[in-house]
Amino acid sequence: VDGDGLFALAWSADGANALLRRRSAPTVLTPHDGEFAMLAGAPVGADRLLAARRLASDTGCVVLLKGPATVVADPDGLAWVVTEGDARLATAGTGDVLAGIIGALLAMGVPPAAAAAGGAWLHAQAARRAPACGMVAGDISGHLPAVLGALDQVVEAR
Image (cartoon, rainbow, N blue to C red):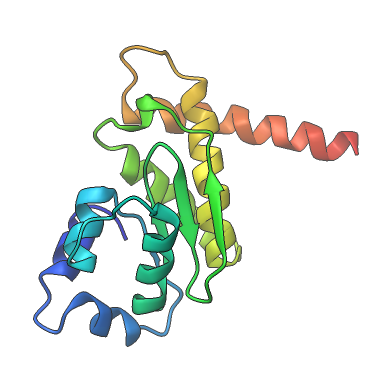
């Protein structure tokens, strides 16, 4: 769930936490700091790892807190930090591409936390192949096949 979906959850009459806890399907939330504040009712604060873990615990969802270092936390308290991204990912629409990558991994049967962390890494690697200036969100999806192809080569070499 990204962007407008997060906004809708935050404005739910029942509250985001109650609504999300009723879901039976695995759910991944992908807020940036502003969306996080809407969902959690407070800003992220200095400890991004703790903030992501708390929101994951409160909602029963995997939380991918976007930022210079992306934090992925699952409801059980496990967390990963993806440090591969850069300022190019702070471009309109890149969150939609990230959500699509995570959705594709979920559809392939990848567990939610692994789909979120792996999706964030793939997303960042594809963005690094795009131009340093003038990148748009569609450039990321255009570079994703090359990133996946490079992973295939590493697997085949083993």
